[in-house]
Length: 492
Image (cartoon, rainbow, N blue to C red; front, side, top):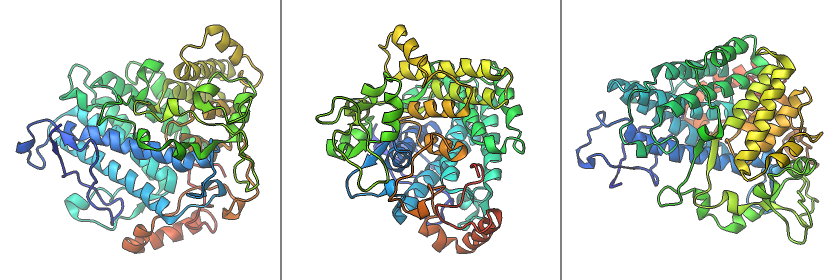
């Protein structure tokens, strides 16, 4: 790696966004002194799109989504997410990051099309959908149709699109990406591909698994979005639409621990992690079944004989003996980060069967669910014996009981410190797990339903912002730009 590239373009998802920042991975190998803008290989962008783009997803999943979902409870005074309070910078930083990396992925797709590289375009469309989904799932309606025109048309005040239309566009991009993969070809510079090392077959499985994730997000809009048909189209045609089918195919950012491909958590002080205590929500759920992942996820609190969690949103909650996140698992330079796993795919299919989206009913749901639970345990605790695993699965608090709640509860546990905002998204669409709202929370004691639009959008795209406010008030009967207005796909 010899020279920073500084030409990634950030588009007008936010009119105020500056050109993309650089990072550890803003370097390229291929003849660095001869690059001409527009002629660079799209694979020169893939490293940063994966590494830096995923870091924002990873970091904010821990920073605030983990707090909202009561995985952890911060005991310091830095933030007050546990009390449903967000500083304005939180909105801005989340928007800016996901918008920027969606923009860069769009630019990669543009370069790939210009150079006739269908595999690079497929990868770029997949990453673009991933980052756009983060943005729209956090905020609701966002600029999309006009958002990528600043480079070509100079449109810096894009109109807002409905979340429904954004989902239609993302799913269309993923469907297109699936058709673009040519497995007979090899990737230029596969070392730049930090997810799959140039393995296009695994990329295609990731693409289709992401389709499944987004389709299940629409469970409350299943009829109008034709969710059942689209899920069946994927699973009934595995040769055409392959999905992640084992832990060996997980989309995992497997940090090497060798500079510069380090997990950024390694740079954090231990105290920055230890100030967050384990939440009683997840600890109580895992204790109930003697979950073998407990010692992998958490470290016992001082003086405690067992795993103890802290209540969220309660100013009087005790920290005595509370467990903390296991630094050996999650805070090392080589600690892997799960983006989308076999376990998650199996949970999605279990829910699809339980809801009747796919054939087989509870018998099929039970099979997928058992696969999901066992795959998660094996992923986190690979030395667990089959005997221990079977005993755990057959516990009355774990074994399938024909409910969506049981599926989501176990999915929630499996997603600890993983997959960005997935648990937060699941909670907003299903209401599970049954979180206890603490006595000292703000936001009128309403669990945060979305993030507010950042100040730069209000200032630089004000006319379209005003139109969006009017739309929200109509769509949600008095809905406002606050953390109480639901996003389109959420449960009502």
